[in-house]
Image (cartoon, rainbow, N blue to C red; front, top):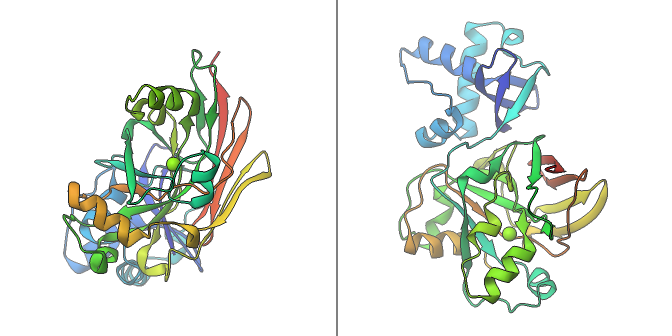
Length: 301
Ligand code: MG
């Protein structure tokens, strides 16, 4: 079972759910469910974020909502046909935290050391774009821009100074993130001992989604194959078992310094094989059980 945000032709936003028995409009199902149960929660456009906040990113709750709505309404009426667009699963996270050099082979290809503790930085939430939209390289940017395939953790509850033994209780689910990086700019900033925030945060440099795999659908997020292709050619291929710092270690470390909020994203670092992207390229990132995140690259003219 995987969750996603969508918009349909009439601009209506909603949450969809892909299950083994089809794809359903969970927003409608939840509406029916709440009416049947006599509860009423506000429904916002940022519904998936609201679901995460309300603890609805749980397969048991979603199964309950779907089965109740199928009692009250015809199952066919709740099906989502193909006439919709995937939107960002989390549109406004309070922060996007990214791990640097969390795969040994990637540290090697950057000619950098392996960090002794999780090394993290931020990407601006304004850089987010959904599946099937364009990564735009600005007109003035003529040097190297790279792709970076990453498994991203979606935080489901407020978390401050969480011990690693409890860290999985903060996770709502998992999604896919492409940590697009203006590499030449990043190197120049690092050489001058400046922060490299801007090279990670250009508009459109953070494709995300389209699916969230609820945490209880993923028995071990450290056993997933992660792969990235450019125009069908494999550039990155590894397994999340190769991470240096595990997800609980990362959550424990980050939450020591800052409170994690529901909907926050933690990108867990990229494997080796990062390479330059250019105008016309189609980038696909896939992770076992989560799906495919596809974006085209265009160079602004
Ligand atoms: Mg990265």
